[in-house]
Image 1 (tube, one colour):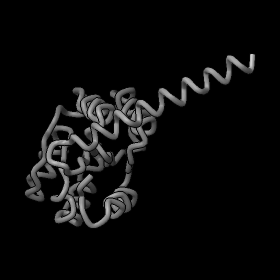
Image 2: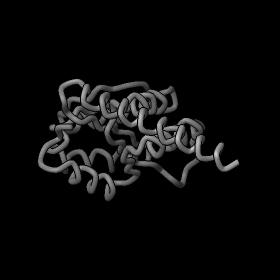
Image 3: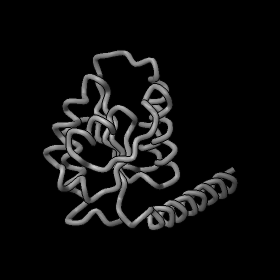
Length: 159
């Protein structure tokens, strides 16, 4: 029995190593070598996202930015940052970002959540959060954590 368990553990370690090597190659092949940050904010947190983006505008300009529809438009208009917008969160935007995380194209997710409201697309939200955890991608759910993540990229947003 232990032999089978050891073989299973060895196979699992190999699978993890292959997945990590593939992910590292994908990160290096990111568009222009810039790290990508995804921006998402529930309706009750969009003002906080805009304030955060204004505070860190110069730093965020060093990254490739993607966002769910309305969050991306509001932040872009408010800051002048260039942001690729995807679908609205409830319309599949959260899932699009989750897919980008799985593909190794997103290096951090700033998802300012409104914890006191029910969200009809909660399964999509939980999927995105779970994928960030599985893929070991930083997930900031409030401005304080996002601030630390932005600082953690160091002097340059290069990957």
